[in-house]
Image (cartoon, rainbow, N blue to C red; front, top):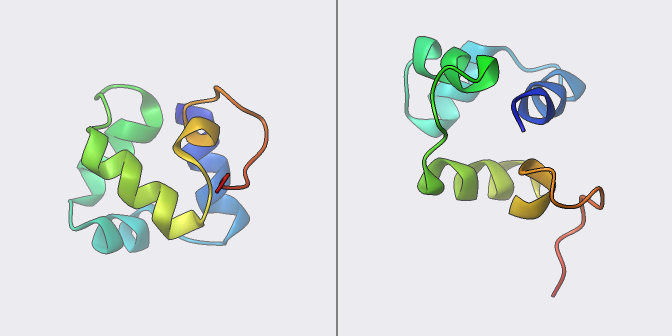
Length: 70
């Protein structure tokens, strides 16, 4: 999952600082998420899902389909 959130961020040419601001956390905290040094809280997973318009399952690597099923 950590590689996936980094790839999503890089694919959109965003810095960690920019994404941290969007998530209302520090750049260091976000960096720890990407490095796997800190568990990603559920509310952050949901916000990442909404921000990137992908499913939480995709972020968690349960699915390789990024589309949100309705």
